[in-house]
Image (cartoon, rainbow, N blue to C red; front, side, top):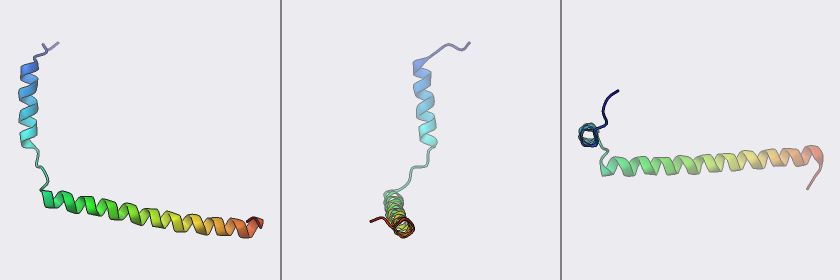
Length: 64
């Protein structure tokens, strides 16, 4: 079994983090905007579908 060496672990982590390609501020803002827009679009879609299903159920069962 390998010996645990905290200092080597920290060095390895720093080496791996240096290899990461971080997004630019512009890329992050664009991606965030797209996620918010798609979330809003999905919310509106499910609201409309829910209202249509509720309307159909009221029509079938005569409730409301």
